[in-house]
Image 1 (cartoon, rainbow, N blue to C red):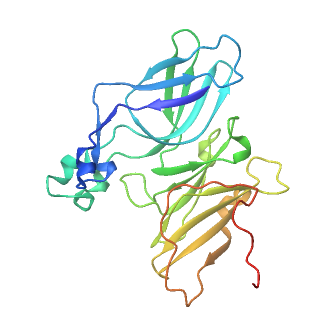
Image 2: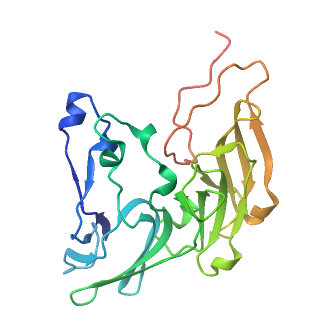
Image 3: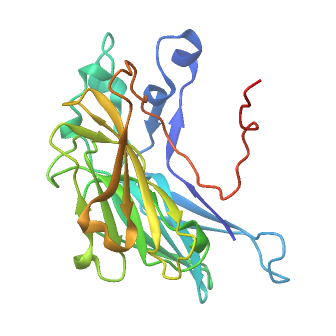
Length: 269
């Protein structure tokens, strides 16, 4: 199946078209409506497989780590919120995101959702780890297959929202064995990217790459961690030369490809 989570969210585009709000400020959570999981047969699916929609508890799903078949069930690991906050109301008519106290907002966390495809269908879900997190990723070689490890960016504490300042390797089979790494009190992480090792055999035979901004040094740095020895910390940290006056800006989302698709290498000409 293609698995689609339709969260109970509406959008009022008028302020965006008028140039007074960004798209994120135009979203509104629809209380009282369920989140719907749409299952759409993919090309090549068994004959007679029908599309199905199953209701689950209201929530807001941000990013998915991976999903796979488990018998007649579908298992999906995703970052979830219990609801999407209404930032427009909190900021007031003349406010903006700077007016919002994000420490008081609901937490993003990694959840496992199990969708039963038999009969009318049903959904069971539970939090995998308590850590407040975002940007989950798995070894791309297990996309669509059962996985054991999820790599994600996390905040230092579990009590309130804060900037992402570290990385976590989550063992979804034994969450108590999950490992963390934090680069420093004034370092702020982006999304981890997972790169399979050339000779890797195990699922965690990967390199985990993550850009983070080091406020002490005033520069962006790239940390490279060994997925099989995650708690040890980076095997290397790359940074701009000392004479570089520009850091790598924050971005959202990326992918690893074994093939290079860019322009040819420059020549002396």
